[in-house]
Image 1 (cartoon, helix red, strand yellow):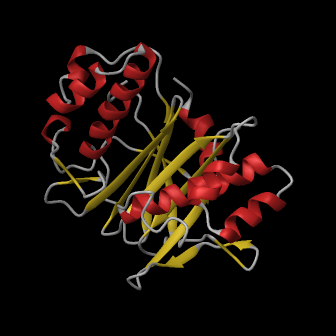
Image 2: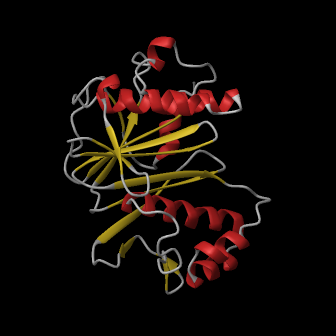
Length: 250
């Protein structure tokens, strides 16, 4: 397991580290961000027993053992983190899925979203605001143009094309877009090219959707070789880095 105190220094520049076993809900305008690497070993039987039958069945569907272990840790740790806010125990969490598969807690104003890339896991938690988070590995040899032609606006394509390192620029825009669409709870194919996070040649940090609601997009510092972003349905006054309690589930 990567040392969380060291990792948190790269998670968001200039933010304090908070570590707690029993968390108060985030204050208005505050987002809690948990970011860490999954362990290599599988969770214990007791930890896996906190998962639902559906989660266990999905884990058993992975062909590669490494992917199964990472998935199990994502679900175990998510349940443990949400339980730390005191609403229920890890095994008692009930999720419902939106139209495009975004999960939310039943009868709770606590909002959360998860993302992963390789072993890295990011979990955003907020109260009374929608959140979306994404983390992606930068692939230097990735042919980004076919994807951008389908998913990006003309302004975004032009911005990526002008960048000195186009793969990094593509990943920056992609993570911002995915975080935004995840916060919306919409599929990536909904209004993809109509939505642009570049205006007048610059990357923007807020956008108004087709229904007139405002959304905010925040760049997160990420581990070397990765890009990360956060999107919210309300302005954010503070993002707190949460150090996962080593004694709770790992």
